[in-house]
Image 1 (cartoon, one colour):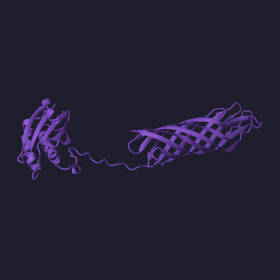
Image 2: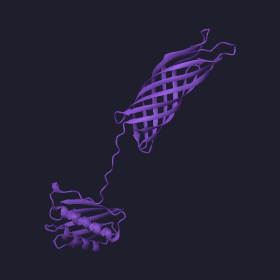
Image 3: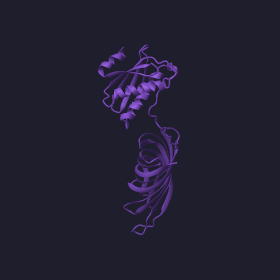
Image 4: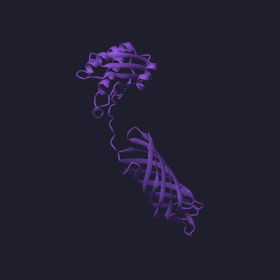
Length: 303
């Protein structure tokens, strides 16, 4: 009875095909639908789709909302309902009426089939999307600056890295780098040559083309300090020592297409394996100890 009540809000008509199945058609907010012509087409389709079946009278409601037409068919005897939806985008006039008639007739015929055996009507199949293969390896190349030592010294560095994503949000990153710089002291100038490697465990989340990652790590390296000859005639010398310490990093990745990406990173750490360069009289020239901070920009590729 609820379905019959909708007739007062729209246009109602009856369509009957040679199968003797009567369809009461109700249209709601469908000014572009020629109800009279649609009834004729429904009668023709009922004779084709319902051939060999005994179809019960039904009330069919068409509710239009933009380019969507919702179709509800209610059997007059049992009150059982079946629903479907038609997208009228890029379809109008006779083509739309033909599509609606076919949808209504199939829905009425389907309502006679037990529910467990029904298949939902499909009007606009969605093309199957080809999934991209999961890429677990990333290779990176980056340039950066780092502020270290006492007195404070800027080091320029270049790094190559490799990463393995072992879970959706986690990756293991390994990086090797070389650094150069110099420190001007009151006695002389000290040149720096640093080789190092780091490993870090990163956790990250992404949305669209962007991804943010952060995590702890550890870094080890070998530093060579070379003091210039002084103006007073003192000969400069050099020393090489290892250094190490914990690190932490925060980085942002911006994808460029399906495989390439750009990255920006802020990292820092604490040097626990101290390296010091002293003058001949024992006074300190430079020390590699304590905290440090760095800024990195680079690019990479998914492999």
